[in-house]
Amino acid sequence: MEASPEITRIKRLARKTICFSRSVEIHEKVIGTFIEKHMFY
Image (tube, one colour):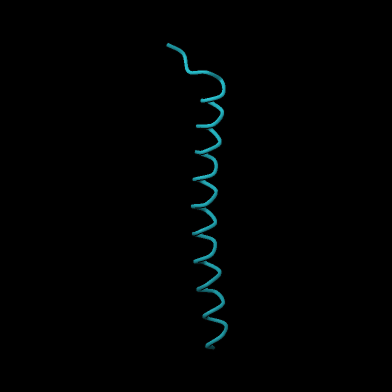
């Protein structure tokens, strides 16, 4: 049984989206701490 190209593409896209949103989350946390440090010092 072979998965259709459509499903494979959707899965790959979903994985990319998840990775992207995770990296954005980390990025926002880093920027948040950076801004906080500069606000209070």
